[in-house]
Image (cartoon, rainbow, N blue to C red):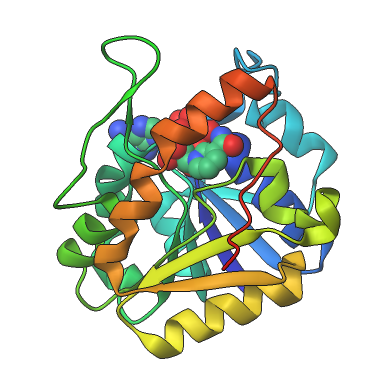
Length: 227
Ligand SMILES: NC(=O)c1ccc[n+]([C@@H]2O[C@H](COP(=O)([O-])OP(=O)(O)OC[C@H]3O[C@@H](n4cnc5c(N)ncnc54)[C@H](OP(=O)(O)O)[C@@H]3O)[C@@H](O)[C@H]2O)c1
């Protein structure tokens, strides 16, 4: 399948690496291709610059957000939450319309230091902002509640016996995304929270996620919902 992944960070690398390994035709989108390829500085969190990392993944294409959006039959938003609407604007509405957009972003605002605040919460979410801005795009919020490595390899914890959430207005798009997550990444337990307004809960989980990260000393953890 032709897949576009908007975002060159830790999540963009994890998702594009895994999907290319599975044989998908992946194009990663960025603001400025030349600048992204010229940047060789490792990220402060320890993962390599995209330009260095992609040399080990030669099948992965890099393009502008617009080129990636044109390429993708399925789209994944793995941009910084505060830049997501800008990234999609650069991608171009005509290139997005009618497609499923898996939204992995979180509204983390580091402008006042650590821990970050949420730039949108309570009565709105990035998932809803994207859906409102692009009514003909089928936005499905998911994967934002787990760290990048776990997104593509849930089996590394408890045999995959832990939960992921999906939110979105289009039932068929959600079903397609659930099947994709199960088939490509081997997710077993996925709770459909409801329409895109339920992305609020998934995004507002982040303050707890960040405190768990601090308490546990690792980002490789997840929640299991028991009844
Ligand atoms: N890191 C994780 O494990 C994790 C887990 C769950 C969810 N998330 C969420 O997933 C998203 C990606 O996270 P990340 O850690 O991989 O990377 P990130 O540093 O949050 O985002 C990097 C990407 O955002 C793009 N970007 C930043 N500002 C932009 C703007 N104003 N306009 C357009 N594009 C902009 C960058 O574009 P350029 O390529 O042009 O620089 C880059 O591709 C975030 O929303 C994050 O909260 C992350």
